[in-house]
Length: 74
Image (tube, rainbow, N blue to C red):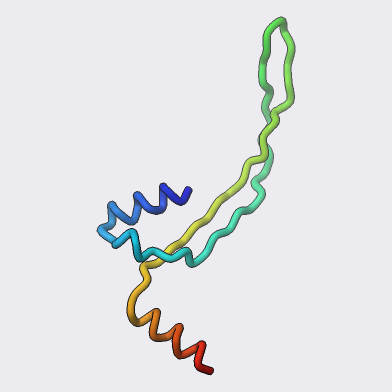
């Protein structure tokens, strides 16, 4: 997922070295009905845990660093 976010940033023309993860969230998704068919007529229940993944990143800038320094001074 992180490699995918990095490649998306490259496609948008952002500086990959200055990316910062702003938000990352994983939520449980509803399980879908299904079967795995096997040899000799056997059937297995699905063995996976689906999830929704959300990642957002932003480009670190000088303004961001100066705001961070001001917060540490207080």
